[in-house]
Image 1 (tube, rainbow, N blue to C red):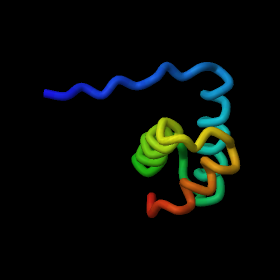
Image 2: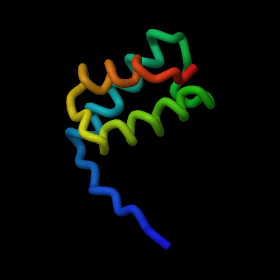
Image 3: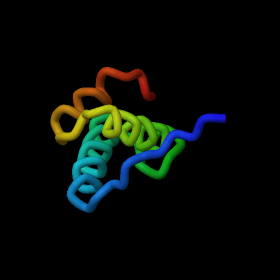
Length: 68
């Protein structure tokens, strides 16, 4: 069995994640607490861990995924 260990996320990184997520949700008229918003949050975290570390790059990556 393989266990994937995630790196810790720090407050400035949380700000980047949250701001990109809220921007994406606002553009799509979706509440962040809805199922679609939670799916986008999960994808944003995955993208962040994959190397998308700035607001603009992360938001662009979210746009590149069919999330809604």
